[in-house]
Amino acid sequence: MMKSKILVLGDAPLVMGMRLAGIEDTVTADDSTYQPELEKALANEAYGVIITNEQMLGKIDWRLRKKLDSIAYPVIVPMPDYSGQSTEGDEIRNLIKRALGFDLGAKK
Image 1 (tube, rainbow, N blue to C red):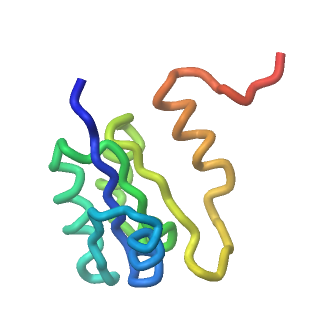
Image 2 (cartoon, rainbow, N blue to C red):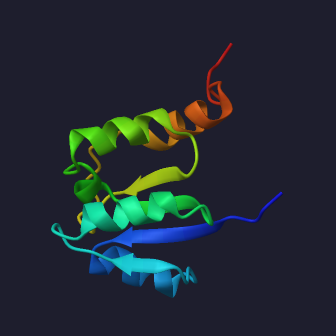
C-alpha cells in the first residue's frame, strides 16, 4: 500500500496555518489560480487528502464540481476561512460516508 501525502491548497491564511501545524506540501492560490492548481493536485496520485479553502472550492466550474462529487480518492476536505463561518454543514461526515460506503455516525 502506497503512503499518501496531504496537500493544502488555498489562500494565504489557510496555507500558513497548516504549515505552522507541520504540513509541508502547500500551494497558495487566489481566485484566478485556484482551479488550475486544484486540477494539477487531482492529477497527482501522491496526494490522498487535499485540504482546501471552502469559499474557493465553492467557486469552481460545475464540471470540476461534478468530477469531485463522483470520486472518493483523493479526499477533498473543505476548511472554513478565518471568519469561521462554514457553508458546507456536515461535509466531513458526508466525505467519510462516501469513502466508506456507510455512515459511521448513524444511530440504530
